[in-house]
View 1 (cartoon, rainbow, N blue to C red):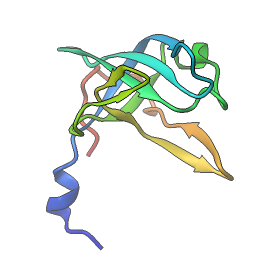
View 2: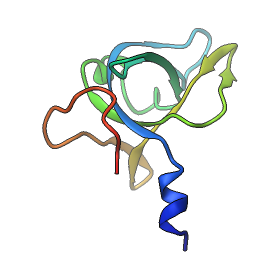
View 3: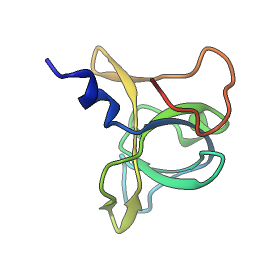
Length: 106
């Protein structure tokens, strides 16, 4: 169990994917550019074996932003997308209706 204060430490915001392509020389990695309204971030995800990069374009998704940047195949990731795990396969999460980019997940 965690305390509510621990949950509030997570900086999860909704952003719109504006660019998506496979990372060169990788079968699993996708490079996403995500618009959070006041800023754009690059996020690397290892979902290429399940989803085509085009699947992400234009979608609003939740992203955990207050992780330290990490490099994958020399490309920096500035966050982590949040998805559901259904029988070992990812399912993207989306707001019920369009929300402003940068909206906080509470």
